[in-house]
Amino acid sequence: MVSTISAILLLMTFAIFIVYIVKGGNLMIGFFVMAIVWSIVGMVPADQVIQKVFAEPALNYAPTIIYIVFGSWFGRVLVDSGIAPAISEQTNKVGKKHPFLAAILVLLVTAFIFVSAYGVGSVIAIGVILLPIMLSVGIPRDLALSAFTMAIGAPMYLNVVLYNQIKAFFPTAVYGGKYLVFGWAATAVQLAAVIIFLFFNRKRFDPTKAQENLEIIGAEDNTASIVKVPKIAFIVPVIPVLMNMLFSWDAIPALILATLIAMLFTGKFKGYQKFVDFLNSTIQQSISDIAGLVMFLMALIMFSGAAQMDAGRFKPIFAAILPHNHLILAVAIGILAPLALFRGPLHVWGAGAATAAVLSGTGLFNDAFLLPLLYVPSIMAVSTDLTQSWNVWGLKYMKVTSTAFLKNGVFLMWVVSIINEVLVYYFFG
Image (cartoon, rainbow, N blue to C red; front, side):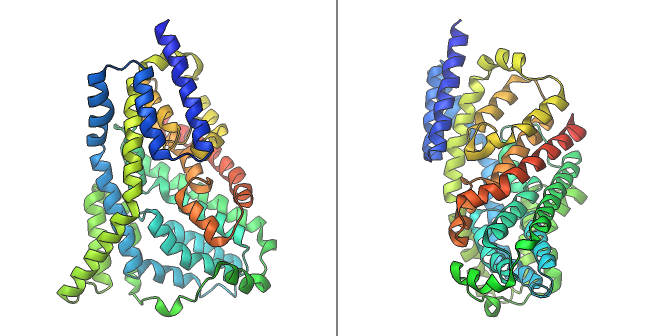
């Protein structure tokens, strides 16, 4: 009886938390408070609250923070070395003659870069180059922004930095083997959907409004400032993934190797002082890019610790209502994927942290299945949610309304989520 009342109270506080998120509450503060509330409501002993909710989760999350640090550094090196801008500039050469082809190239380049690059700083640095290219060939601002953010979201299935963030909820899942095959397939599905989206909206392309749109966002001509780099440097963004696929390297040495190769190809080793200055500036900027994210994730993982301590109270409820058939569950999560929006109960970096922690804690399904199951709706949110940091930047930079952004992205990503959940069942069911 006590356990049932406790479970009901936990669900009530969870519902209040969702309302708090939707109303724009600070997520870091919200998760920290929820960690305390769920510990109290779940009647977790005080000594376990200190150790299992606050201490151990934060300490155990340290390896993931290291992945984020090196991923952010790699992304900053891609930008500051000139590799990412040079790759982006190549797409501009076909732009004005073939607008639709230029749009496809921008999407492919974006996905290519963010296979390994990560962080709002990298997104902004690439966005101020690629988005004006899309506008210059006549693509409307709202279409350009939606396509760009969904193209960033597509390779996040493969991005080792983001993967290691969600792996904290599903520690036995493995980045490699079958998962990478699924990751490439899911990425391809999302990219294909975005290309189809642009194809059916190509009649809205209007080169006569290109200059007007560029002036609205205050875009500057960055061509003169783009550093020339050797073409071989264009392979650098995929080196971390290739090292894992071909040689089963961990992400840290793979990212370090790719970073050093980027510096080598772009001449950053020519002169000791030049190398030191570049090293220091990229490290300082990359750490600055993720400082807020790290503290947010600390609060998130503490809440996850509290949710795992309370998981036993939810097990009878989940066992009764969750379908035990993997296909039915996968399709159901796909249909419910919009619940990931606004940091809702299917977004693992939102209220879905509780969903992930509780599902993992119940032991009803293995981690290899649960990780991609909840990754799909979370990536829907990453791609088109108004609470994603780089999406917020994009709305301001491109002068696009939130209504237009949601209208363009939500339905398309909903369809993509259903398809990718079927792939989850195919590979892991």
